[in-house]
Image (cartoon, rainbow, N blue to C red; front, side):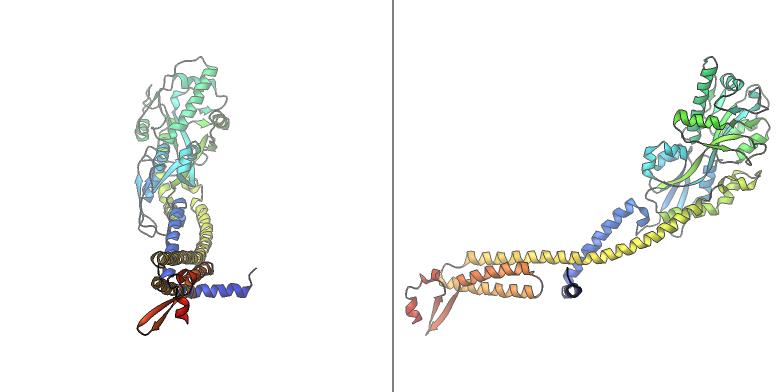
Length: 491
């Protein structure tokens, strides 16, 4: 192993070369910076939090339909956020399903989507960042009380449902709003209705269902439900609504006294998950609306998702703005809550959760940046040596080329031998200077000097002036043939 003094000597030599050859040093530094820039660029594509340069950006926020929690959140955070002039634009959509589709190909975007949809969309999981859960979406199944015979006592879905409940679903429920295409409500509601249809087929005589699926906005259905006046047939018999709770649109319909919330027993949730491979959660409406203490339901978390190109800093800024707007969002959803502490966006400390992770990653990132800078500095010396190595190769090639040119051009007579010897001598001095300046390594220097020595002897000769006549005395046997009287000249 090398001693400390040997390593120190090599270091000092390298520093001397750095100062001695500023052009090579500049070239080496330029190469290092180019490599570092390429490295940072591709690292930024994979991990946006490592981006060194990030300009002002306008982000899309895919939310939902007006009146729902998703749209209220998007509307509250619409505008400027962060400290660098970034802004966000609320984009109205049909709901979580459409949001997921848009985020898979829209860059620089945020969106809201249900956990259940994320779990069943491989393309979505691969192409977006799953940031953090914001609140629990609860399935509201609102039914007209006079539709069911036991409507006043309440209607419940379970793994072993009441015969009358199945009969009413088969015969009495005509107009059902399962949510618009592109919404999470429609997907989850379709599973529920499929399972109810299976139960009807198993316990009742098979019969073609009478119900009509209403393809209209929730706002239209809510307006019709509020206007219902005890007619035999209504324009909306049952409505599925997967959303935050409590929320005004549901509260107003319940306060009218003509509609109620259908209860979902945990056994029905377990059966749904088993039959269709879902991961729905058991939930309830306790404290959400008046007289809903014993009303159970199913739920799925609503997640904030983002394009993979968005950095942690921008996500943190958005969550901070969302956290600051939490009270105004809750008030826009429900103006007169039964229990304010049970408002939707108070259930999870989403900002604190992400902020703790962000602080931890920032400390780790600082360490990585320091390591990166040290690596760049360390990389300078190998690159410098590599550039010097190319210089060694170039000079060796150049000297060998010049030797070949001399051998080819000269050596046909004593006069040319003398010229060749002079050229070889000049090359010898050049090699010595290059070696002394560190532009030739010892491994290149020794073979060159050996070759130069061989040709130097071959072309060795001497000029003697005798009067006005110049006589060339060859120094080897090859040239002696030009001077048969060589010995006489020597005498």
